[in-house]
Image 1 (tube, helix red, strand yellow):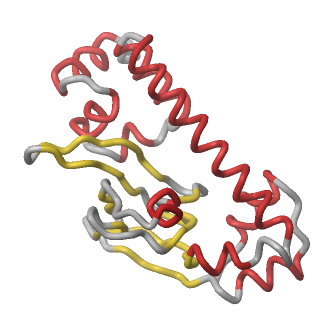
Image 2 (cartoon, rainbow, N blue to C red):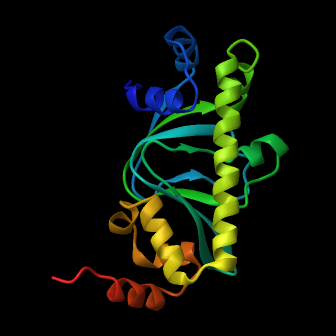
Length: 193
């Protein structure tokens, strides 16, 4: 199991010594997802958190048969519906692999059990939670305040590889615009040759 990426990601947030990481690593499992395979199901209580070693996943909701993309998770990002786990309420979203993925996974209850004996786990969980909360706040504010073009450029700035790896209609859903509008934005701002 290759832990280099997750160790680097955790150490960016908070230093963790190798012996503490080794204890947590005993509970980590590798999970491979095929393209279009579901990671988290709507209507089920989420039990796992993960770290994306490779690939990209999409989180979306369904309403009246329509999909609404709410987030993307790429390499070196943490993933998992902690709200579903913490409240013991079924998830209202679906998370699926958009390309083959490799995740390092750990049950939420195992990770939470380390809070007392390995303080770095609790601190890192708080940092990840704060980051996710900030991202949600930024996205909601952007949907209210920014033009579609501004939202598009913020997405490119935050996740530049996303544009070439995800179908345009999913990006349009995420940005809250129609695919035709996204196509026009991309045409207007395509680099001139």
